[in-house]
Length: 193
Image 1 (cartoon, rainbow, N blue to C red):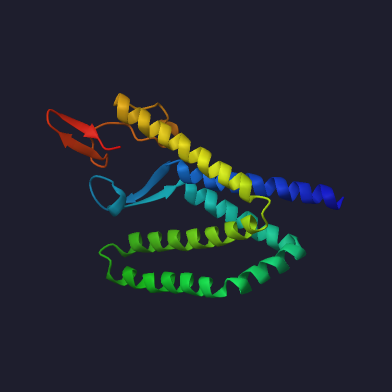
Image 2 (cartoon, rainbow, N blue to C red):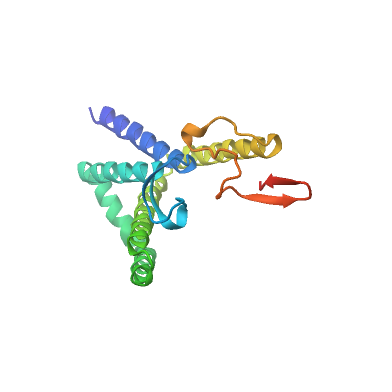
């Protein structure tokens, strides 16, 4: 029974690691609130697919820790080992709270601060899972594969000057609207690659 339970946890770890990491490469987001007439990153609140995946990963990770006493004790040792790094990271986040006070749109700064805090918790939790070694090889293969996939899409867009057709996962539509990076070239406007 123990080995079946370990196989299930191993499978769930792989699943949540894959989904959370893959979602970072998928630029899908939903506009929640815009503070200008034309929504863009600097004056709008978006929720990204990766935000949802990271929150789900962190919820799963908490269950994983509290339902496995051995893993929980390993995690406490992991925290003790990296306590100075944790202290520096949390200090940075606490220091970043000052920016909320001076922001022209405080709620926008607060959302960004929450996202930074979630990314800190995510990277620390993911680091713990990868420190065991069994997930590291799969993780590296995943990162390289997703990076190559993104590069191929970007190269296709750049050389063909058209979209690849993956708008449902957040691929930018190649138009000359604000927000698309472009370079003025004599006689043409090119998309920056």
